[in-house]
Image 1 (cartoon, one colour):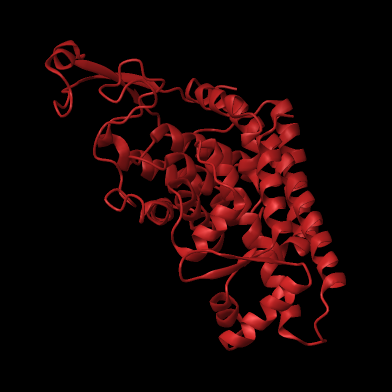
Image 2 (image 1 turned 90 degrees about the vertical axis):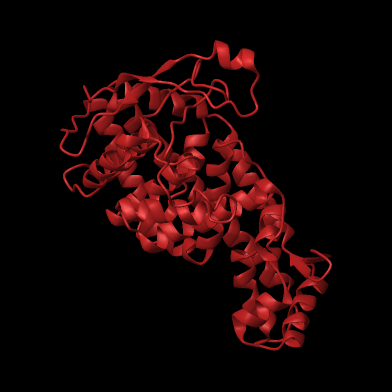
Length: 389
């Protein structure tokens, strides 16, 4: 069905001389074409019968996951969020093993990619917990995402032209040139109004809002991850994911080329493509989430057969924490259960003696205990998400 298409406007271009030769400056274009993005707050959402059928199936699967599987997933929600964050970041070509990611969480130090994914995990958690489906909520999510890596732009609408692809010098040859920054406030206000609508099916609303957000591209960096976190906010606010986060980014990652093609189609007036893509990704997300919950439940059961601690010992209580946080320190266990450092260390050493965790030096000051079972499962979840069906 038809949907408002983007158009364009020709604007003057004044290249910055910093770091470029006189020849590059001389040959630089003096004007460029930027997108003019239509308002969608009041646009009628008309979906094809095929799209509506897929959307109905996806909605049923999402509700089933939230009401039936979530009872198993609830204790694993933090881990599920980390898995979703890893998958979301992989779309941005950010990769890190589960071990490096979780150790970066514990120590506060890690590789550049690990630190960015840790920030993405915080963003996902904030999205699920706050569920603010408005412009202020979007800006706050962006602040959380970039407050450490790029504090100068975190939580701020961009004040310059950006483009996707092409060269760093100008937008010549770019794959897409988002709207000029003078349009951003009005476009974000319009997007906020669309998000507040209740006459659009929740999954369709999330897909369209995501595509519109990516088209507006309101921030200097971090738009992709913020836009995918927005999906969780909308699904939560509309009651489709009330207990945990549906790992939808993993489904989108299954075919990233199709994802970007659907965004292009949306900008050309095709709303069915992006809605179908999100619906199929949601079906896949429910399946993958159920698989992850089942595997974690099995691991948790195996631990109970291995642990030899006396009944009521702290080590038994640490098992559930270990499922959620597969890299633990004595300080983390001590803070979680309000026990002394010695008691916490004894519990972790008992788990190590029974083959449930393995200890290692995380940095010069901290020793950690890792669940190799859960870390391996996290990596497998991310790898499965990266495979095309």
